[in-house]
Length: 421
Image (cartoon, rainbow, N blue to C red; front, side, top):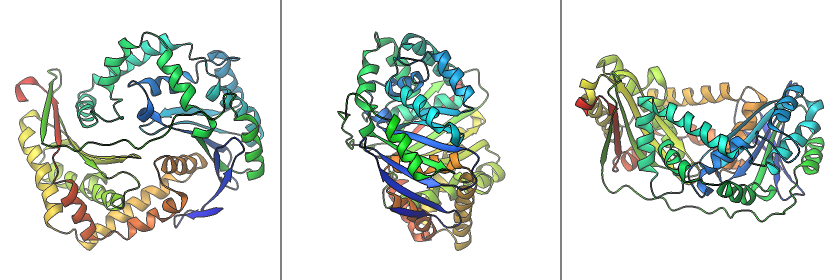
């Protein structure tokens, strides 16, 4: 079955069932200098038994297998001129790579070995490394304010892998057992799908993936279930003092629609208008240009498979804390009270489509886009229709989602000098 995605960029995706119980989503790209392959595993932070387990497993895939040391993996990656990266998100993990077409079979054998035969032997070293990175990240007041927000918003959900929660959990991991249990139950072909984009035949892609991506223990993988996401019952204001910063870092966050929700397109447009479009967004024009409140100000809409988060951020002088929070409220209220103009709506859609076109220029970008959307719960037809659904969003749609979601209780977090909190 082939599906064409989005006007302006041809993405003809072929769905290929594989003999190992998985699926390959294949898109030919004639003339592409390298082939891009994404190996997606459902679960991510949502299925980990303790915060940080999925991220640690993800990192340890590169640190040795039953037949390769970390040094041998590194040498082989270099010899194949392969670009490779691992990443864990709330709902999935991905092993992404690009390589030359003639190196496909050797690359697939290496990637499969890493996926299904990792020893997880560098567990203790990974704990130390991860702890150091998280502590360093949290030294940034902006990161600390964001982490405080995420920790509170995602409390009592399966998505609890914030920096702080991982740091609190690491000392309790006395052995590698939680990682092994997660790895053995989640990293299975039946819990995996593949995306591939490049100048290669679908027959060769299918043959090599089926040959190398098998697993000796079969398909007893973890069941993927939809979690129940709590609603906020009241507004909350949380602070952390950091006296070595000259700025006040403020975040405000709400729950929002997940990727597959009917309101998703309207929220994408709302985010672009409010703060996601950078220099032309309302928050930038009003709070930075007109009022001079902001060093940085923006909004962000992050949609996962089973929930979405909508956040506002501003970095400002500590004396401007109340003005900045009031500015957030005023701009949100405007969206609830007054329909956006046709001109502003059209400009937001052009911004979204323009960024999308730029993002999908290379094989690796297209491979990641297809895989990420599929992992977050969209079908190929829904991915195909997404840009058209965004283009059909009306001013009334934007006003409606603003009224529904931005009127709900929210959490505000502030990090800055103690005297200003």
